[in-house]
Length: 373
Image 1 (tube, rainbow, N blue to C red):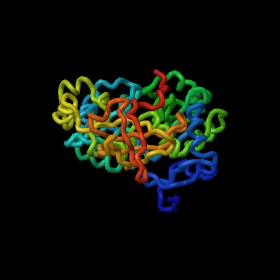
Image 2: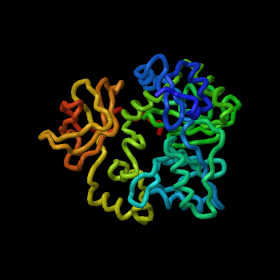
Image 3: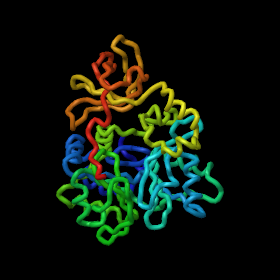
Image 4: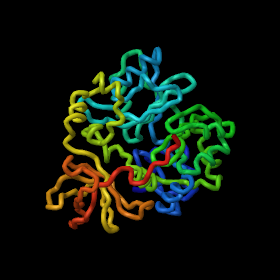
């Protein structure tokens, strides 16, 4: 769908148009799905060098309260992560859980190194839902505040550190899932070593008025190209990462989604997170379904919604994400199947336009992660 004047625009909208970005609607915003070089080029360039993504549609928030412990405990009442134990300058991936154990959203939580406050990043399509959900459940002393007038850029790829380091030397000292306030060519920003491509990389939060200056400086580096939504999706699929509303939603538990690692050991012992009896029961007794990776034979990709069948023709699951992997030069997918069909190497069929395409359950990620530990 073409972008129209009714859609929201990020601070980088004019730059996307200038660069020839194909603008489409995503989460209520006009965003570039690709640039003139195309999705394949953008994907492979990010894996080989560095790609710059505009993710300003995401919901940047702060959780504030009378003290750090009160604020952390308020968020722990909604998530299964260890927020109380989150150190200064550290980040954590977690999710908001509903009373049935489903995910309202997945999010990133950062304990700022400077003042110890909690920064949250919600998915763009869910931020209004998340705001209402969280605020309705916070104690009176704790507030959820938006980060007004902020842009968010992601610089991803094996050469991201070199490119960013020329403008912000302290960024290179960060390790995966750490963050710090920083200066980019004299511009105040907040930088984390994180991202959603499976590559080493950074996310840069900066005042909206300075976003174009930062983006143009990075795009002037020889390693960096602008990357659109199309390659962002294929990169995260190769990395085995979930997309909210597709691979996870309010009906999906962390156990079903193969995200048990997000449930902190202390939280498992105390069983003090939403729907803990149900989720812990799935952990010990098994969930009715599991998210798996799928490698398809041939060249035809399977898309979201395709049925997954056993070799005797029984429909056993559904594809939630699928496409062609530029890195592997082969089609890949993720989906949910019962435990009996979830072991690596299990042979299945995926139904595409009435044809059964042979597939095998494969370990995730499809492409090894290259985070800087």
